[in-house]
Image 1 (cartoon, each protein chain N blue to C red):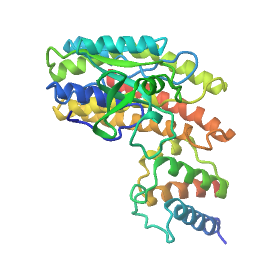
Image 2: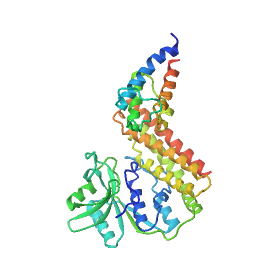
Image 3: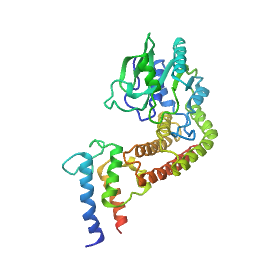
Image 4: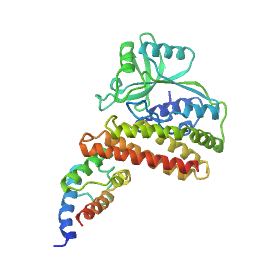
Length: 90
Length: 292
């Protein structure tokens, strides 16, 4: 199994589970869903990031954390989280 | 009274909402957007990081308006001053503990909030809270003393009030507004940046907590000021508004992280100090762009 496939096997289920928990829904929200519409505020996004760090054992770089305010959709957060996780898995 | 501005503004910006409301009531429309004339830092060696609070001075220079910001040693002195203003028909906005106010879903928070004192009948005061709406509420003297005195999170400026002593006497042009803000910034920002670095060193040494919502509020209001200038097609104002909005978001994010239940975890304490350093640097860079 390639590193990428192995990483994907860990990343997506963890991300989806934590996003569902944060949004308090039973199905994964589409990437276009906004956190605002899901009732997730910036404090909860930070909690979500900390949970991602815990469960994936990958710390978020400070420059990505200071941009949290610009992650308005699930897809935007997924893209950043994926990039950070994959970079650490290389 | 009617309220031009109501609802929940970002943390540490409610006093501007009130001053904007009072000036609008007196016929000075749009001043809420013109009050964010300064940004910088103050720190008293402990407690929160404050903004520069230079805006009343700049507003006075630009328009002739006089807004006094005062603190007091005890509640008795504060109330004597409030009554004196009231007897002279001077509008006063006071800082109180939100815990004592009516209409909140989370009633157990002790946070500083600004309300407008409408009337001072015997044995109490009547106030309006613009976060809730134009509803006049009465509190007895004992409760009022308690809400003025209560130690809230990060409250280090005791019994603070804002008195709108005199109205603007002239309406500056957009260029005059911009120049007034820029000239003060050119003089005041560099020394205040040293204060921010003192604060950063204290945070890095674990001698101070990260508490920056007041600095965030000042940038939020400054973004509004550039929004006002942008609406007047002032050169570069739209860009400055965007830069200042981004900066305000970064300060508020830092505030949010510092308020997080997991903020005390070692990795988050380190992270808070790193973020503080990054945001101070972004603040200095943004200011440099504006002064260039």
